Image 1 (cartoon, rainbow, N blue to C red):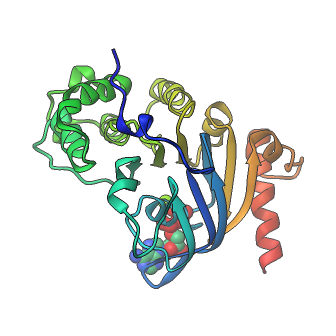
Image 2: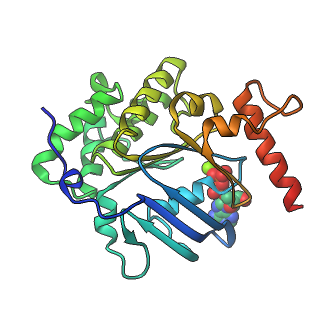
Length: 265
Ligand SMILES: Nc1ncnc2c1ncn2[C@@H]1O[C@H](COP(=O)(O)OP(=O)(O)O)[C@@H](O)[C@H]1O
Ligand SMILES: [Mg+2]
């Protein structure tokens, strides 16, 4: 039996899980997100863009790790500004950073439990939720292994487990497939589709095939700006013979970025 989390029983009073208008976010002194308009609801949304496009900075703002420098950001109906109830928002968030920290001597179970506690999950729910999260990422056999003994792919899966432990309404995954082998990637796609049925999932990746297999729509960024926001099929239609890429989806993505670069120069 699955326990129902508080987030599921709370009334939903917002139209979009994530709503950004004219969003500006700085990375250091650099304006890495430069006036972004974005609305995301239930589903699996891919976030694509060249290195340096601002994907990680956007994710960090959505995870409430950094404050926007301008524009408006509304998460789960709460406007993220000086007066926001960030604790309430964070209870409904799951975030896997591109690079995440952990105590090396913690076991996988302790790591996920600790993150559940930080997200203020009710104490009685934590052991069951941790077990479910660890099972879902295929790490049950390693639940009592110390974090420092895990391979790259196992670490990434432990990171995914902590992100989903609270059944988040908004799940943010920054390059989660790095280090996963092909079989683990197939399992991960299934997990994404499963979580995306009733949550808003934003997943950044360089692997366009993962997008085609697991995502309902695509957000493409370049140099801090929104280039494209639409269904995967529509991205595919953008590509032609001369575009770079091994698949129609890669060619569609390349065409979008190429045209955006040309238009902004
Ligand atoms: N701490 C920082 N100080 C200055 N510039 C930064 C910092 N972090 C990132 N940047 C710059 O911000 C831009 C966006 O970076 P990032 O959000 O990491 O992009 P992506 O995840 O799409 O590769 C890049 O040009 C990067 O060099
Ligand atoms: Mg990044």
